[in-house]
Image (cartoon, rainbow, N blue to C red; front, top):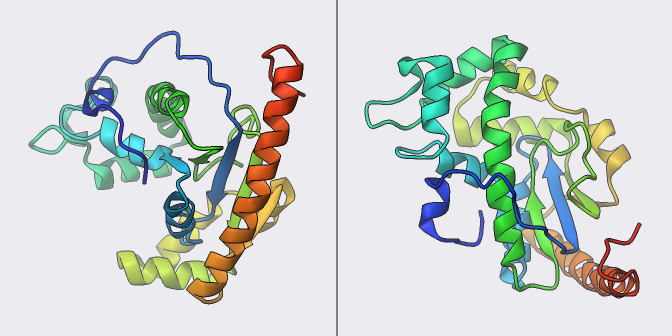
Length: 235
């Protein structure tokens, strides 16, 4: 889920010099099936700009997407569907079994995703920005792009049940995906804020309401410090 930018962004060549972004940014993350999209939608309903890196990845690997020529060049024609989009099932099979291939794919996608997301952040008009990065904790420098980390959390049994219901994947397959991600404990250790998503939707909304008010205050404080540092990001 993301605010819509110019449709050409997913097909244009990446800018070698992305715009400088000065926004108070909340990094939204959580394990598979934790409910990140539901939480993001709640914040978006409050007028907060939500930028979803998964959504960007889908856009740039659609038919005509800017990432597709490099992907086909590195992985072969069989990773593309007849219309030229990424064959996601085939690519999952390739990268899941071989970390080197996964790194190769990431080296193609990540710079483009970053350039597009930073451009969208620079256009945001809300008091703060929610940047959804599913594998934020797994990155080398999780706080490089965000000022605050919000983790959506729920027990692993609930994650598995949700993913099985929506995708039809086997429990074994889901557990193997989870094993390749950060553990629940690792995510919680990095979190500045945690939103529990194991109760009712009303409870989730109430938690979002509380966090939203807190984030508005934190963003205002951050911008005050930003101004006092002469337009430099505060420590």
